Image (cartoon, rainbow, N blue to C red; front, side, top):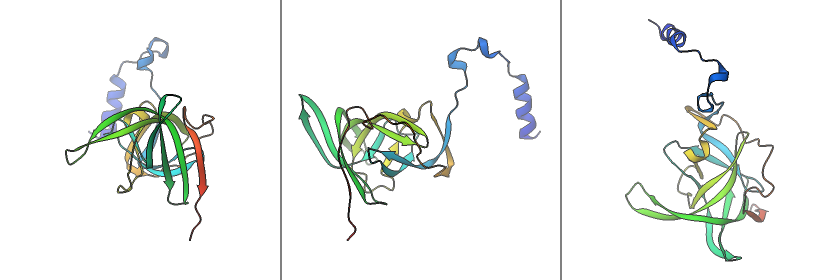
Length: 190
């Protein structure tokens, strides 16, 4: 029996409940399908970065340089820099420190990382979520998008990459709650 015939038989045997009788949890959700590597935009400029969509990671991670924790109005904040290497645009961002997490690395060691809440555009999806900050310069992808960001909005096709460019029409006014754009400068090529 062909797979197509088997699928048709299964569909015919499934109970058909009217939509009005379904609960919210039973309603089918429409989710966008992306490749396992996509372009994302972060920050006020915005900075465009390559991202790996990783269903094995819970929290998203963002490459950051010059990470500095400081206090403002009695609350802890983080100042850090992100760089779009393709267009030589650098942006320094300040955001409230949400917490610190311990990440277990592949070699068994642990690393303490600051966590901030940032807005990110993936395709036409703009969501604000938590990101751990770490120097990812030794990795191929400066952004790792975890399940918390993707849940309910994104499906990953492991056979595809770069399915669409970021095109978010609506972004929060400051690009993320608690985030201030400190500086965005175009670096001059030598």
